[in-house]
Image 1 (cartoon, rainbow, N blue to C red):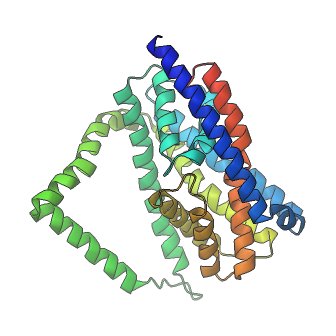
Image 2 (cartoon, rainbow, N blue to C red):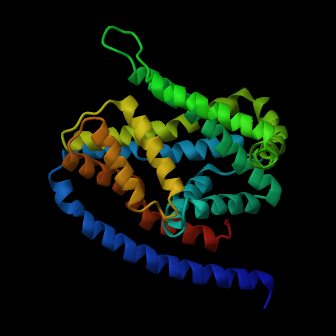
Length: 313
């Protein structure tokens, strides 16, 4: 049996197992969440808006990947790849399956493995930078008082500064920490910098990539805000950016496939922190996850099968 045939057989087995797991988990989650009752009591207008806005992060990811790719990649097929990551991430922890799928897709587009991995690294690095700037803006906006001044949580910021200084000191004077920092930060930056420098020579691609990166957290936050409106809540949109980014961090830190349970709990806790009651906050969190993850799973499964048949991944 050739290597290609063995790979295809392994993929078939993985798809069968993943399909069974996805169906079981999806049925259990929908049954436990009682989404039917929640949808019947929700505002249909805001629910429709939330469903439409929930597509914005998908388009943002596609735009940033197309803009930062060193070769021209088809938009429609790239959209199907990002849709398929919803299914793959359901059976892999910390979105590792989706990451591997996008690297594999770029390889099938003709990029060597090292270049494909570097491209995904650039996409993630620039996304992190844009999200960090957006978070600073949201923190400043959240700290504004009614008279127009800014009241920041200085104790929290002070602790953050102390932590940063300690980390820098450890990296400077402790050899093991310095080696870890070099391996985790310096080496990836050195590897990605030549490709990133080539991208920076094309302002239009930079603008598209930045817009795509902004669309992801803003799209998730706006979807969560619309879900809150469906159950009678009205939390500040700026705070919801902090909530969705924090929820993503919790999901990435917890090694649970698809962030099942951890994401819903983090979103609900964040909504409660903005002033919503526990019941409506949980309903809004479940609706948000249904629109941005669970509803996509059957379509993502179909997209993955279509891509596999055409050997695009």
